[in-house]
Length: 295
Length: 292
Figure 1 (tube, each protein chain N blue to C red):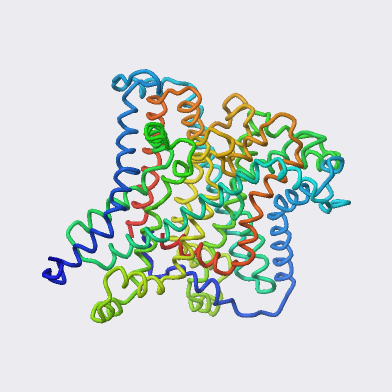
Figure 2: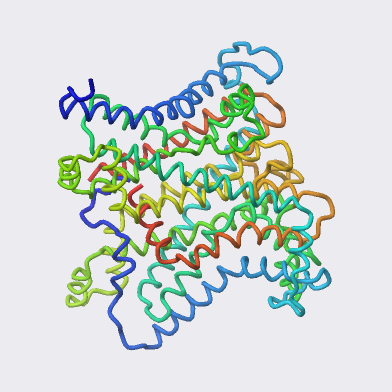
């Protein structure tokens, strides 16, 4: 039978033979669970009892839950602090590293190395750094210089930036590499022309380099924004004795979802929180598409 | 990632083109020194992790980077305990299987969507692409329920099934198969190769750099994956390294040098792989970052 098919028909058979298993996978492991998550968000269910429809109850509870608003605020502080800081630092490093030839590969390796580490392992290393004297490295260093101690992880104001720091640190290498690839792609003739015209370095940076880096910058802003909105590993591991503490001051949305689902077993409420996360991430991605399109 | 500019960052430029050599002046020397100091600061956390794992308890809390008498007692202690050894094996198995699965399936799907013309092609492409918008965190609850019903909790399969194929990898491979000329495939067809053979023997060897990039990303992602293994595993024997390390660190009275040893055990393998294949990894990261 197969022999009698035209080349075009044979291609169709092959294509669907290749796609059969993947299509099944995406349907069962991606699409069905997505629908299921949305469904559960309208139900009340504690894993053991029956699932009952509650309409929008989970969402109205969420909106009147002060912890949720605290968590929502924290999540956006991670984003609004993490993204600009990491991008500015990464650009500064890439901009200068691009102009250096001596031991260039070695320097690049130093900056990239943290990207290859595991977030959990490094969260524990930084957690140790942050301990009070006589344990923590930072406070020991401060003490040896005669500077007063800093309370890092037990303070409601310092804990969030302290947890953010290793997350920024680990992602920096990736951003530096992407920025350098972007910088190298700008034709040298632009710079030559600017130099002949006697334009200052500062003007070159603002009028040539940054505008031409726009696609790279947009990509990195979206990529790191999504990363910070989904922060979990660092927070969980640096605050295991009281996840998201002290007093929920470091708790991001994903940690709240984890606790609601797998500590309180309130599946419906947790599913509603995941839908909120989904909507936030979707808005960020759409914003990217919109920014990229207007040109 | 849609790049609308004609000026596209590209991986090859990063590795080959270098700025013209200028005579060293004070500015250049200052720039180099600052970059060097910054780079040293970047690797300090890793250096202190390794150094502490080689220290005796009494010297853990001093600021010295080089231990007075470096020793491997912490490693023998942690590994003799047996748990880390098992977690290490679990992590290896899971990372290797998911990597192989992604390299095979993502490239097969990417290839099919790129090189075949068939009804439903566009819909399949858009459907797979749209899963990129769905965060893993939204799926963990349904996955958990599914695993519970099907008896997948606390098994290797349960840990790895969500990551066996990824839309990111499929899209990446599709982009790279665009660079394979259709003539090559036509020629192979005339030579009588079937479509599976064409994919495997003609197309795949031409996208090796992309396959390497994909493999690196998938391996690293699964090696360091935390939230799903944390949810799906119950028994200590089934933990992966990150989950194991997290529970180990949380135990009462565990000394910091032992936690640092555990952290080093879960970090050193990827660092060693990076130092060996540095060039390919950086190139791969740029390719995956910009095309994926």
